[in-house]
Image 1: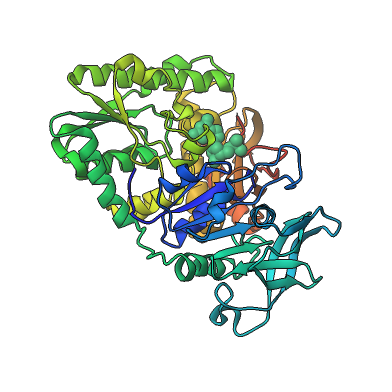
Image 2: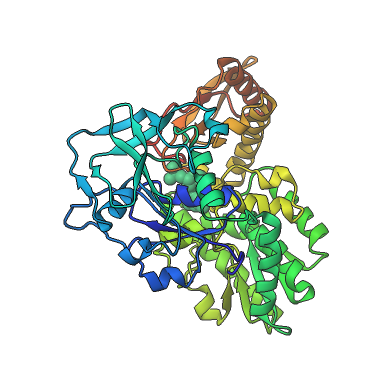
Length: 517
Ligand code: XMP
């Protein structure tokens, strides 16, 4: 989607931080996209970028399968910032020398700045000649290409930042994009604003304006669009955008599968009732999902059934509307990148709706396909959705079905909803929610004996899961205060009659996963 006239291109050489670089650039208010490291100069120039950033990469520039970029990008036409592998690549291409690593440097390192302009200006570094940076490299630049100067070295004397101010080519041996480089964001901003002359006009508002225009252009003045909403942020934001773009020619179908958390289905319905002026269909499919899930214990089978039913319910409703040409979907940028980028339509796998568009002859529109999740949240606020909704923790598409180990029943769902609401409430009351990635209750599928008053109780064990994470790929179990855990435990056992035992999951990911199923 054309959303901003100014772009930065990040060439991805397979480094673990490539996507993070792109996120950081966007955080600075500059639109950017990732392209494969070996994209041709023509492909890159088609974007008319204000600058190019070369990411790090796992390999040595001398490895057999090392990816090289088109050397033409160093012609000086467009500013370039090479990070780690990217800096070595630039050095090699411009006839400097890179030595296969003898002195490995990993982790925090002191950086001694020699030349402040343009990347290390004094305001952030406080006139200091030193700062801390995050290094991770084996190869090192030992001879600069002609025209370059050393801007900074590590405390061990390794060349850590280089630049050719005439051609606007810069290289950093460390990672400015990670939080362990405290001045990193400033260095990136200096590259974007001082070197590339970016304006920083990529904002949720500019996105919404451009996306609305783009949807109008794509859909034309007569066609109608339908969208399935499941209760998640992405599909809700798509619905709001479509409503703004084409109003009466759009209809949202909310399939309530009965697997959402306490009060969520009501919250979504209220939002749509209010914001979509009645142009949404609420389908109460709770009984139907429960029936299909009866007796099913295998988690993958649960996911499959839920995905399939979701499609079936949606299909019945959409067909009854007649004469609809477009399906709007909440695909976001990480889905696009993970599925190999390209322009091929990507379907969110957790709803398993793979067969849907072809079979129903819908044309697809995906207004969020260039957004990161945190950008979707900001766009949600821009579109007037409540902040409590926009900031919600991640929640799996199959919902509470994957938080009940074993068979799902109405009774277990009701117990879990209550217990989960208590966990959420207490953690939020304690003000810890902003530090946690996810926090919830689950039923691990075992019963336990207890005593309440004079009575023996035999009912489900409730487990609490709370984790800290950056992206959900790895996670650390949260060290919740004992007093808070005690309060949660007392409330759950006190307020839910059949529950007499609460446990806390102290497993990180890896080796565990965040969800139990
Ligand atoms: P795991 O359990 O794999 O979860 O550590 C990582 C992240 O993904 C979420 N998750 C899912 N999301 N459909 C989804 O949309 C699913 O089937 C699913 N399973 C896990 C999980 O909540 C966490 O944020």
